[in-house]
Every structure is written in C-alpha cells, then in structure tokens.
Length: 456
Image (cartoon, rainbow, N blue to C red; front, side, top):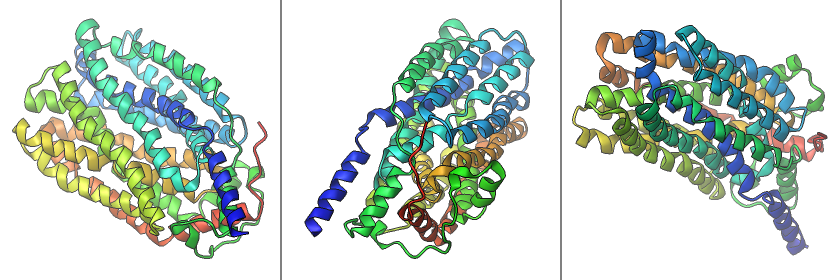
C-alpha cells in the first residue's frame, strides 16, 4: 500500500513538471525584456541629458514615472490574471510593451520621453500573470528553483541591455538603445501564445495528496496546524474582498516590505551602475557596460543559486529555508557593498562588486517564492498587484541617489545607500515566525477541495 502511494505521488510529481523547462524559460523571456530595457535606459542617460539638457535629479524621474503607471496597470492585470487565460493575457501585454518601446525612438522632447516611459509602465505589468503561471506549472518543493530560473531572465536581459545598449548608443545614438528591443518583444509575444494553460491550484492539491499519503519528504512533511480555517471560495471574491483576505497574511506583507526596502538599492544600482563606472573609474559606454556585466555575472550566480540553495535546505528539513536564505543574503550584500563603493581602485573594487552582486540577488528567488507559497492560488494575481504597489516605493531610489550625487558625488551616494539592503533583510527575517502557519493554511485550503481547476 505504501509503495502504491509513493508511486502515485511520484506520478503526480512528474505530471507537475510535464511542462519541463519550456514554460519557465518563456516566462523568463518576458522578464528579460523589461529588465534589459531598463539597462538600455541607463546606457542612454548621457545622450538623453545632452539632447534635452536635464540634470541627474530630473533624469531620475524617468524610472519613477514608469513605476507609478506599472502600479496602476497592475490592477486590471492582477484581476484578469485570476479570471482569464493567463498565457494569452501575457502575450497581449508583451505586444503592447513592444509597441510602446518603439515610441522612445520618436521622442522629440523630454516630456515626450516621459510620456513614452508612462506608456511602457502602463503595459509592463506581466508580473502577476507570470508568477501565477509559475506557481501552477511547478511543484511547491521545486518552486524556488524555478523562480531562480525565471528571475534569472532579468539578469540575462540586463546584461544584454548593458552590452547591447552600450554598443547601440556608441554606433547609432541613444534612441537605438530602445528600438533594438522591438524584434525581441515580437518573438516573446508569439512564444507566449503557444504556452499551455495549467490548472490553478494543481500543485497545492498534489502537495496535499502527498501529505495525506505521508510520502512527502523534507520540511513540507511537518507543517504545523494553520491558525486560520479556510471558509470561502476565493475565486468568487471581488476586489475589495480579496484585498481584505490578503490583509490577513502577515508573511506576505513582511515579504513585500522586505523586498521593497531591498529593491531601493537594487533599483538604484540598475539605474546608476553604468554612470558609476563612467564617472568614478573613467570608463567609456562600452567598457562601462562590460564592467557592469562582470557585476552581472556575480548577480546571475546569486539569483540562480539562491533558489537552489533554499530548496535544498527545505528538503533537508528547514521549513523556513526560503526566509532565512533571503534574509541572510540581504544582510551580507550590505556588508560587502559598502567597502566596494568606498574604494577608488578598480582592481580592488571589481572583486568586491562581483561578490556583492552575488549576495545582492541571492535573496530574490527565495523571497518571491515564500510570498507565493502563503497565498491561495485564486488570489495570487491580485496579491502580486499589491506587491507591485508596495514595490513602487523603491522607484524613488534613482531620484534619491541622484539628489545625493548632485551634492556628494555618485560614489559617496552609493556608499550611503548600501546599508539599506540590510534593513530589508531584517524585515524578511521576521517572516520566519509566521511562514509555517501561512503555508499550512494554503495546504489546508487545497486539502479541503476548494482550489478548483481554472476554466479559461
């Protein structure tokens, strides 16, 4: 009988990964577009300032304008994510993003460029649908690893944006830093149309079945009793009801706040990183992009390694593995980056930035995953909308760093800003107190049979 149960669970697990690597790679492609274009924007800063005559503080408004409208656009996308076929929704959003990207090449004034950023932000809202799909494509115990691959798309896109954007600027001017993304956007939109649509809540239902059969190994086999009892069909919830329910999940909020504080530094580095190498170390656009790519290699190792490390410790019996890996990486990054930016010799700074880049991104996949873990499948799209709203606060960092840079210089501005990452880690560490109970609630919801298949 035990053998039969194990076989059944094994089959279920296999079915849960039937999509293989295709879906996560496709989803990573959508993230690569968004983050790569941001790095191209960083490469275009000098040209934009020369063309339109704006200061560091003013040019720092470009990512802020985009982030505000990402928050607005995430509301309808989050609601639709929980109600319609998500793969088609993603394809439509990417197609709109691609059209908006072309408008940058036509901007005749700084105001027109800000409007173009607003339009990009209004449609650059793939997060709710992508994360919801990821959670339903892959088993709970492997979720952080798959999140690492998905988030790795951001680093691949960023490195392409750094190198390709720098080359485009050097050869054709700053407008080509944006126009070069149009063909890639068309390709990703077409791939999204071919993705299958997974059933909502399928992975939590499989985990509940495994727990009932007592064949699940690792920490997930020892969940505590939830502190709440699922009492509703969340699929029927309206927007206000959904947000009230999300307000009862402390782990989600601690994760959102911790990620937002951490992203204050990350967003600032993504925007000002190229300028740091240009101004502090005297590099040209292409050389600065190549140097930033070295930082990016460390970041890639961190973003991939974080999810794999967290899932490994989860299987070894550490239920809070995802929380602790995320918090530890954030605190460690702050310790390394302060001396890295304080130094003026590139030979000394480069190795520290490589290590700092690795620790900087180590928390992303585990933190994004433990937030997904504690939200029932029917509300994940709207939960990610809340995450987008909260994270919008982090978009102020380029303006803050730019303001400090105008007064103190960019090097000291980054030195003063780096300890912020440790604050984010400390907030995430608090989530370890509530995570076991909140994920137990999601599993209890699935066990009660309330996570129904989605009907596109």
